[in-house]
Image (tube, rainbow, N blue to C red; front, top):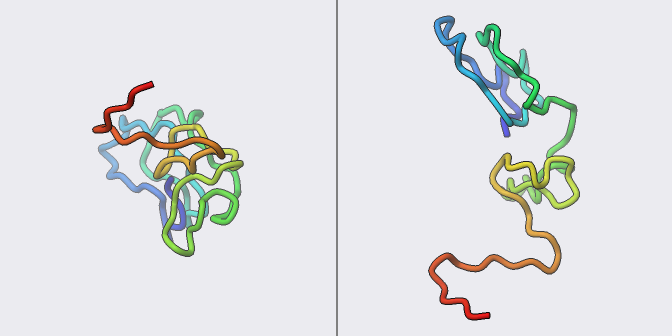
Length: 98
């Protein structure tokens, strides 16, 4: 998630024209979402308008996980997804026995 920058969301030097940005969410960046990306496909990135309230769990209090019900939930972008109702997270070091 690359949002809310005063100028560019991502600005690279002019020699970095082969850097590819794939599967990102760009929104509300001042001048443009990116700069100095030449001849690079940009089709896997999301650039539609949106708001923090529609996309994040609770941005005002620092919870930038993707909100359940957002168009970007489940797409593998951002700080992770808000768990769906009825789901749980099993710690990786637990000894789960079914």
